[in-house]
Length: 390
Ligand code: PMP
Image (cartoon, rainbow, N blue to C red; front, side):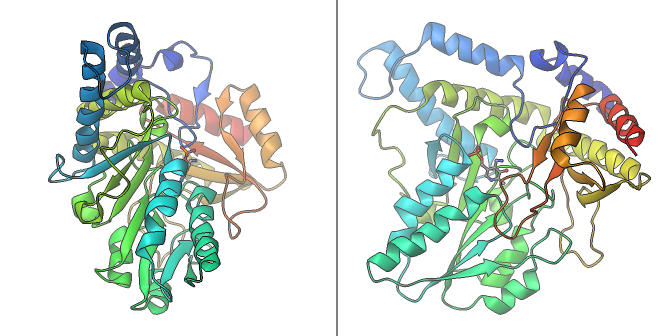
């Protein structure tokens, strides 16, 4: 059953099992690494470390193969029906991936009078680069309009109906988040596609979805997928951009300018293998069930306000599916203080305004985010500490 499955997986995270007195509840910031990933890093560095490409010796050739193989691995992990033909570009994470698209691809795609849709309560990484494109093009005499992605008030979800009203034939590019890093909702990309039509390019910030739930480009019908390896159990400094074939060669994929982060890429291949074997749908089932348990418990504690959780906050929400992120605020205790208090009980959570854009939360909150190593016992202990602070 799911509990036994989870126990076997949790046992593979040495940092977690090595600290039974602590509970890591900050996986939306970065995830812990299973032994298989640590082993691959050690093996790569002790058997094959070299620079990629142009090599005339085994280690360089192995490294080149690793990089090429991992491009295909990423595409396959993302449900690309033709993984060997798509463009995958390695980055240091989501921030760099989104910037790369904004810097190297989008300016050449846009024409004077075009519109781009940019969400204003997403993670900053998915706002600033797109606004910068507008400024950059304006200096060259090309004027584009930035249409803010509307949010439904109070729900933390996009307002797809309002988006359909705002989008027109000049709407050629949409930046969107897959799973919101504060509210936890799956932002329903298919509805965005319907609102903007088949020709607009959709760029998906998948920082909070890849590694947490099945992500299929075939189903989502998006043009770019950007994610962070470190949130998907790989090393910090690893990440990738997948580009739909028709958009490629998006940014010299396959080109070898500079030294790639080969260790990060090795860790990414191992992490995706590990996740595929674990089953992203079961990872989602486990973590969402824990987050739902936390939410149910919180609903009985009047001192807390829930800003995001796996149970929908708005009755008319277009979001059908929600993820393992619970964001809360104590009505009397500052969120930074609450973070410190929780850590004094062994809980590691995130507290601040979570790098949200201008339209996001300003007062600060505490975010609890989960991964496959978290347990029912951790959630129940957290609930009892939260109850004691009422
Ligand atoms: N987008 C979202 C939705 C995120 O949650 C994050 C990380 N918190 C980022 C972008 C930035 O990711 P990274 O720090 O790996 O570049």
